[in-house]
Image (cartoon, rainbow, N blue to C red; front, side):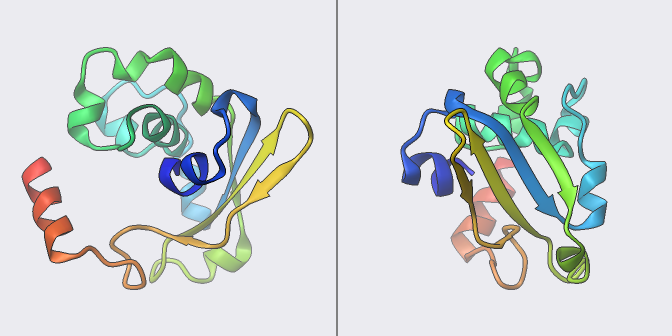
Length: 138
């Protein structure tokens, strides 16, 4: 999220009114904005987006840092996230975990991403180096 949108478009996250995540039906279950545990946080799309914008990644080590679960900027961003089922993306699940993002800004403008694939999906695989790094990190 941060590298594909925030950095490339060069906007201030505070100017975003709403973040819409269009995805497969089961993704709508991952909506908890205020996770109380690391496990809940890992499975929260709103929290994960906020964590990624603030810290540049989302992993158990980052989430376990003191104060992360209650970080005010993460909470502010999480409150802006709405998860919406896209029937076309649901048709691709579980073989593909796809999503699209729509950002709505204070000035009324919008940004819509193309279809994004979860890292590790066949069309977006980990490199050997990325797998090694993930293994050592977790």
